[in-house]
Length: 327
Ligand SMILES: NC(=O)c1ccc[n+]([C@@H]2O[C@H](COP(=O)([O-])OP(=O)(O)OC[C@H]3O[C@@H](n4cnc5c(N)ncnc54)[C@H](OP(=O)(O)O)[C@@H]3O)[C@@H](O)[C@H]2O)c1
Image 1 (tube, helix red, strand yellow):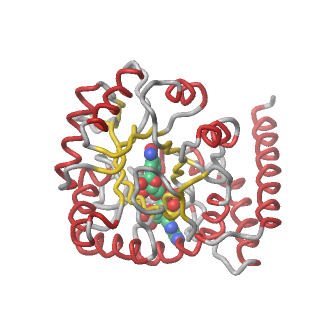
Image 2: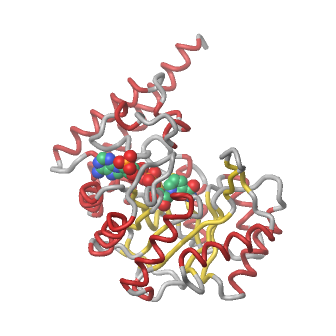
């Protein structure tokens, strides 16, 4: 697997990382717990993964605890842990962003306790908080770094103007985590070139659009009513025929290369210049095994065909939507 170097890691980081959102299970994402979860982490490690992404909200804290327990078994020095801060929940279960300095310090202390570590490798802002001045939040992150609670600090879900504003701050950011998959290519415009120019590692998430670019059919992915997928418009009935059309075209490109749809999609994502790492998601060993097969490059001409195909699909979908709305 290709790797890249960052000052906050003692070894080159493989281009594929593992995301623990499914671990610990919750109303929004059913996933493995206990021994099954530990086995999944172990398989990721054996597959060459060294960066593990987590967050306080994953499995309502259980993902961090499971990861922390397992990390001690495998040897903390052999892997890197990145967690997040700033996504909180009301007692009714609604999410909100809170990046006030006191809240940041409190949340990170709790994460360290759950992970059972003195320090993590990376603390990332989960989502921007429009109500707290950005400079205050970034200064708090810098304090965590200066105090040795984390080796590195990063942004998450920052785009466009907000990203530029954060990068202009005196707190030096070490990474940016953003979504990137065939249906969300927002970063391609200006953000990715900007990060390349700044030498800022970009870690992308949801390479399969939460599983949509896998062999599992969309209807099956949306069966449980409270699932996180219901927040994404790609899973809505209105766009389903267009998405299905793209999926089936990409599946045939994948077959031509002897790959599965998820392997082709992961390979396509990782091959974008400026993307340092792709976070894989999986709740089963079989999914992880399959997705690790997306770590190899696809031939450049095929990559270009996929890009062209996607651009054309986007144009057609836009035109169809406008026609439907009578514009
Ligand atoms: N910073 C953020 O705001 C943010 C947001 C989202 C994610 N992330 C991070 O990025 C990681 C990856 O994102 P993601 O989970 O959305 O990735 P993804 O690869 O787009 O979706 C993963 C899900 O798709 C299904 N899946 C994966 N591989 C499959 C396969 N080969 N065959 C069939 N189904 C398959 C599984 O769903 P089932 O579990 O239902 O089977 C799996 O949990 C997360 O774990 C998290 O660490 C960060």
